[in-house]
Length: 132
Image (cartoon, rainbow, N blue to C red; front, side, top):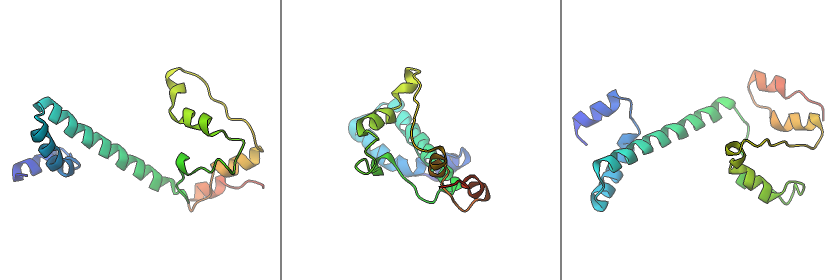
């Protein structure tokens, strides 16, 4: 990468492009991409990297004690939760169709404890005060 290009990328704050440029350039040459296809792929990589970085920043700011995903959920332990229903809801199709989703069940105090998992932050400790 030339010094001029590195300068302009830094000046425009396109820091992630520097990581994605060499492999995308090789692929574009090999597959004979148009300039528009190449630029679109390059900017897409920049946007994706920025979104991932923003998610990571939000997770650090939240000070959650444990990061859990839907893939880690033990459906065999919580038999009242249907795997197919949760995976369908994870697609977020209900947003496009403007359908409401309502989760019902459990004790209210117990639900508050689960959703407001305690962490080191002062606000989270205050929110986690709930009876068992």
